[in-house]
Amino acid sequence: MSAPIISLESLTNTTSSGQLLTTVKSGGCASSSCGSSSRPTDMDSATWEKVKDHPCFSEEAHHYFARMHVAVAPACNIQCNYCNRKYDCANESRPGVVSEKLTPDQALRKVIAVANEVPQLSVLGIAGPGDACYDWNKTRATFERVAREIPDIKLCISTNGLALPEHVDELVEMNISHVTITINMVDPEVGEQIYPWIFYGHRRYTGTDAAKILHERQMLGLEMLSERGILTKINSVMIPGVNDEHLIEVNKWVRERGAFLHNVMPLISDPAHGTSFGLTGQRGPNALELKALQDSLEGGARLMRHCRQCRADAVGLLGTDRGQEFTLDQIPLEPHYDAAKRHAYREVVAGIRDDHLAAKEKAIATVTSVNIRGSLQVAVATKGGGRINEHFGHAKEFHVYEASQTGIKFVGHRKIEPYCHGGWGEDAALLGIIAALEGIDIVLCARIGECPKEKLMEAGIRATDAYGYDYIEAAISALHATEYGTPSQATA
Image (cartoon, rainbow, N blue to C red):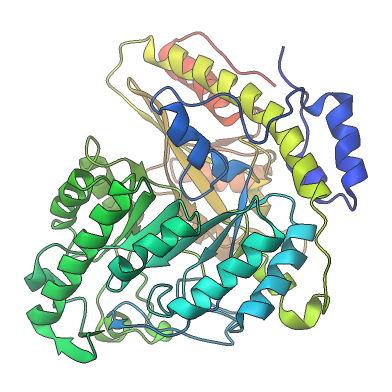
């Protein structure tokens, strides 16, 4: 029997661990373990234990668990044409941007405050706003402080890889089991179009010399991490006309060297951000171009498609940044860590996840049982928990799924401006949403009004709230049944 429908929003809005524990005892979960006891069929149990609560390394986990970045590492040893670091900035959502830089002591204070209020928190990362390995003393000091206070939190870093080999053994000593490396090229002639300079060995290098050194150091660092059993995620920025086709070769290189995930992200090139690419008119890819490249990489390194290109001070579930709630002037000067709420949340979520996984596997089996050539592109409004639980007008993004002979898979997300403002729909926002939904067949949401539904239909996009609060995959299986005559598997 399916687990009861428990709103993750109601869980995370509770004010005490006692309320969460009451939910546990009332049937939210019968397991005493954290995370989910079930695992995907394409992953061994040891790897699953490492990723099951890490929202960046597991698409399934990102429905339930949150990450936090602390901006303690502002110094950087390379310049990227797509990067412009900004401090004291609350208005942009992209890597390298933070509202405030932190000392290691301030970071500890902030992590404790967030852990007390955000029970989904499972991962602490340092992603700059410079480079975590180049600004190593601050990175290490922060992790040492946090590990003493919150020993169960996962620690991870994001780096450009230039200084990574110098610190791999220290990463092992500190029990850091996840590292992200940004690798945009394996050919120095491509690299010189992306990196104006690097600073290495007390010298500044430019051109292909710089790109060659960076490439060699990135490959060495990746190999060293793989040898030591540290999971690596490779971030690559897709830059049309520069490295888009070349990323196929990058995928091969990183797979051969043991990368666990490859995350291909779109270039962000708004001129207002002040990056070199933005100011010179280099465009970013559209959603369909990005998906086409990602699809061409299937069969290589495992792909990540749920990245949100987070700020260097992001807090919360992917796609929902709560960082502005936890600036230094809003948190206690000496917070005391209370683990009860986080532990109780995990107890509840464990049962929900197992139930969701069972429903997902059943839905996928149904879809793959029918021999068809077509595919269904479905956009889903969701707040998390693997359910269709967001109103169309409130959505800030849609999760995109594809149902085909190979199953039901998550293929990306489309960011949008919300349709409703103050209870009223905005025509301009709806036009933007329709443009963002190019290539989508059906939109699933918890509720939708007749006006936006009709406008979407005029654009050739169907929308329905008939599956509101169902599991996403179960609803897509039911839609697939309607389209192709397969048995329906939608469940509450």
